[in-house]
Length: 369
Length: 167
Image 1 (cartoon, helix red, strand yellow):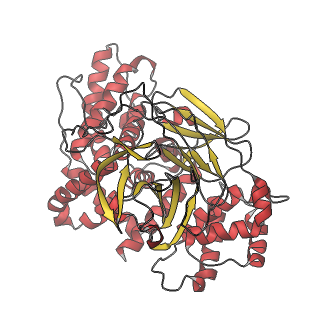
Image 2 (tube, each protein chain N blue to C red):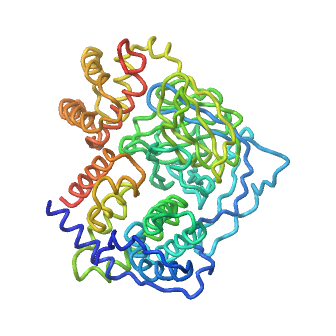
Image 3 (cartoon, one colour):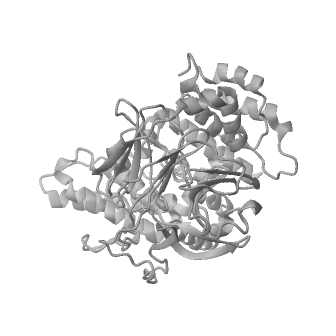
């Protein structure tokens, strides 16, 4: 056993020794902590934007409804632990997004934290079987790196979360009312990608991916599951700020929205336009994924053509082989890190990038998986 | 004292109430400790463990291994708690970290525990299952709800992160 393993044993035992245990005489006493504040009545209607190709896909939902109670301008009630329930904010052009807490100003932009979906009353595995979730961790508004390119053009951002080194946000600007997905490298805000805008945006270093909308996603959605063409659940994600971020998948993939009790609310086909991949070239698509996810500026098409020959023979669940390749590629590309960048790519970033490439690029490669 | 997997297997008697009471007395402490390690909050752990017992009681007649079900429910509730509100969770962890500092500081484990608390939930759960519950990979995969191969991957990522942070 490793030293670290031994340290963990001792640390866990140490904490467990401090655990206070209180036996209750009446087990039907109310239990409160495990249930999150749920007084927010989903009032949103929905719109969604799913990004298909390169790095991230996103389904956004949000629409105003007149027949539901919308306390958009009413301060949210506080719960006993001081945390506010989600409130709806209008981010422009009638788009409403649930947020929590107080906004902060970063680089002149008002940044809110997106609120999580209603808590599931069922275990996700009862709905999606053996599926794995796509890790999306919350990001505090003050930690979101607002790129200089947005200053003066964007008034409001709503954070969705982070996947590894990439921060995600839903955005709306007053000028156009655009609701977009922003992807920003956390330690290198110059690495900005904009995608899935509901209308044209005027900034950013280019649109990455094809926006596909899912305008009827129900507001009660608590879980979104990605199914393959055979109807087999592949992955799931809990929406934040009415958004989920799925990496691209094969054509025929279906996103299924579930309510908190595990009932199917709606489903929609989320095709991936492989013609875009072909137009851009598989190697270029792979390179874009790699640069975006790792910050390593390896965009040599020949290098990626060679790498794809290896990558596209690996099943996406062969984590050990993927990690081996990620280690190899990260090491090989370390000299290509962006000048002035403080971002340090890790093998984990490489693994995520390769998983993405396998799922999004290899499916379009002749003989690929 | 680690939570005993074997102790979770309950001998059923003739009285449902007696059986449930026995399960409660035997397993509550272990479950609260498990939830405490998974959430970093003793307060949340206490309620999570009791909610798990309520769920077991509701499904008592259909459960073949109430102890095992209890543990899975506890992990799921702990995960829901961690997910339910990022801001609240962060606050709870900060609160827990302060408590841990005073309680665990003598043993010098506070830094490591604080790092574990900030790992993604499934990575944290795999470490707790492996190093505190002493479960084999196959049982960890059932507990955490992932494939056996994923257990190895999650543990590897978690240990890698901890080594990096500690170095």
